[in-house]
Amino acid sequence: MTLVLSAANVAVDAAVFGQQYELLRAWILDGPTGGTRPTGLALVLRRGLPAWFQEAALWLPAPARATPPPPRPNADTVPTAGPVVQVLATMVERYREEGMA
Image 1 (tube, helix red, strand yellow):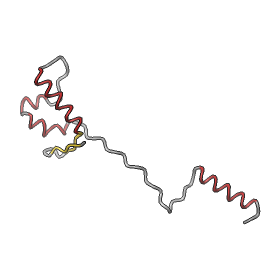
Image 2 (cartoon, rainbow, N blue to C red):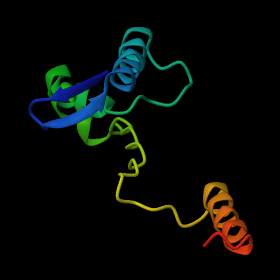
Image 3 (cartoon, one colour):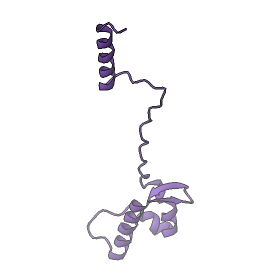
Image 4 (cartoon, rainbow, N blue to C red):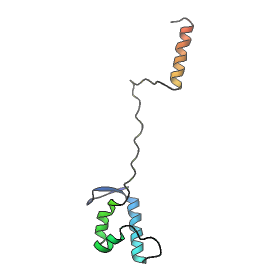
């Protein structure tokens, strides 16, 4: 799922956004537990959680884009390599050798 943060107008992966939010929330509720500080903590402490929501798209990774499927060959395209071409070429050669041409 993808979220679009309106202030930044940037798409963010909803799972990553939720994960980062939960890390931030846990750190704020439990205090420092010896781990690394969550990303954006200083922003929350200085400007509040709404600012973190608005600015999170600037440092969170964009969602992965699906790769487009390969183009379909159309009827006008003639294959130039591969087993089908080899079979057809062999058929034409045999036809010519037998004197049917």
